[in-house]
Amino acid sequence: MSLKHIVILLLGAGMIAGCSSVPKDSTRDEISRYSHKSGFAIPQGILENDPSFVRKRLYSQYQEWRGTRYRLGGTDHTGVDCSALVRIIFKEEFGFTLPRTALSQAEFGEKISRNELMPGDLVFFKTGGRSWHVGIYLDSKKFLHASSSQGVTISSLDNTYWKSRYWKSIRI
Image 1: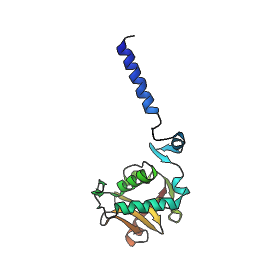
Image 2 (image 1 turned 180 degrees about the horizontal axis):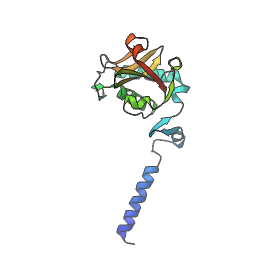
Image 3 (image 1 turned 90 degrees about the vertical axis):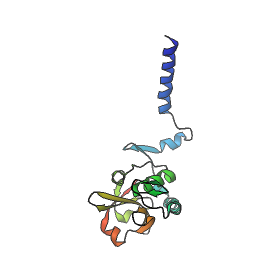
Image 4 (image 1 turned 30 degrees about the vertical axis):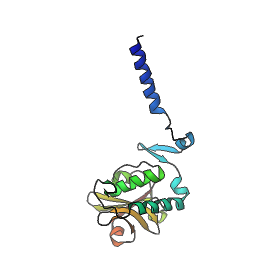
């Protein structure tokens, strides 16, 4: 076997090992908490087991994003849309990787009723024939979202507009 073949074999083995290795900053315990559904990693139980922690983190994110204008397709502080805001907050605060669109996020978790809502649950609205909106439930019928008219804000589920367009809620 030539040196060229040995190098190719070693590089191939290194690439395979690299794809299956545990990230440097993760422990086996952290990795074992994750399950895979729809190709996205979900740490199990964090949101349900500590609602006060989740609420605190969500209000902290609200302070960071408050007033950021709505921009369809936007993913940063210069402009953000509803599903990107949800995706960014879940990734930064809870290590969840959610799908990018509101409709994809709506198909992701376990459907729950409005009276079961806990901090961190996602609330969905049908805002048009082929348009959907998503926000993150906080507490006391309030949710955090990127509004097309107000930017990142907190609204009430009892608001006439949102109440009439409510579609469903899910728990991750």
